[in-house]
Length: 515
Image (tube, rainbow, N blue to C red; front, side, top):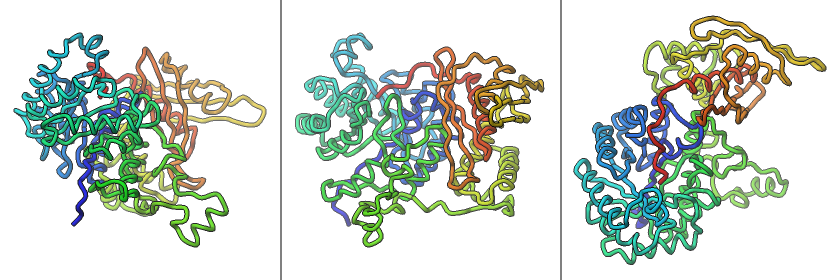
């Protein structure tokens, strides 16, 4: 039996991670990610911000009703209507948590809240008590704690614990903290607050200075026992503390950290790939733990050392975090039942027999082009077919592209637009540019293309290409995804996906809490 303390892993990929520009996820996609996090044995899953929109509410609700082995949490401001909405969404949870917050820094209290410190404490206490009337697990966050005065933090945290908060979160909301200083802050709070032993202290660090993981680990070394983090470090601006880096740092340097997690780390890489596919945010090759080069060795000296004794240049086993575990699963001769079984094993839920039929048809079409179908292919395939199964304004019927040396490429595209089949052609600087121009002659969307990115889903020249486009119109940003063994077709799919998302109406009522 280990004598180490448990470090609670609080994943906020579905809430704070979704605040990345264009990273909005559908309810089905959020549920797939939640199931992956549950497989990983994440302690707490922050499923969303229930009052932000009807879509957020429904996502929290379905995740709460489905996930049984992780605690499900919803964020709420320190307002009665937020807390009541969160509680309603969490009704079906096996284990629930309401996470309520209010700003505590002088600049936020004065200019954002326009409230006196006494009133802020009073509202925090009222919010915690109301949340406690719904659940015995309440988390209270001091928004912008990194720039808050220590005396006021001590005062409001003591009051929140007395009111019933069992977790106290200290967010570095704007990524301003430095590791040594942040660690001292946590230690000081634990020492100065009389009832600090009655709550778990948590941290939520943003990565504006590239220090989110370092700040989180410094806090853990100084007594924090929960870390709020996201898969791939996803999050607004420069992102959040990366779950995989936190977990593997604590595990690899167990000589320095008197804590351990309960996570099954073999699900880290599959979860990373799923989040990347769903959000359209590719993982850079040199990303720690989950990047394609994380366990690659180019140097001859390194390769020689690895062959003689792995630990000469590797401090972790690639297999421990899920590399090389996604073996070949299906091929062109695989039947419908094998396909259904495998996608269920991957935690993918298709809402109807019609969706299953469409996904299976797309699988058979892919299998004719690509001999080996991997788990990553299935995730991309399902994301693509479920996105296309919605009632979209624009649908690709067929396309042809002429591209040859010395001649300007021309693309001919046929779409169903608002129920009518339309064909147009256009030229461009390349086949993708020509295709996007042809689409625009039909849809006349007025959008601005901000990002175009291509990544291979698996290895080999027959790999599916996964294309991400980010588009903007009127200040609204969305990401579109498309996958195909033909990059130009994948690009057209991604562009149309983005156009259809732009037509979506599920806008959030207000920005999610920047905790």
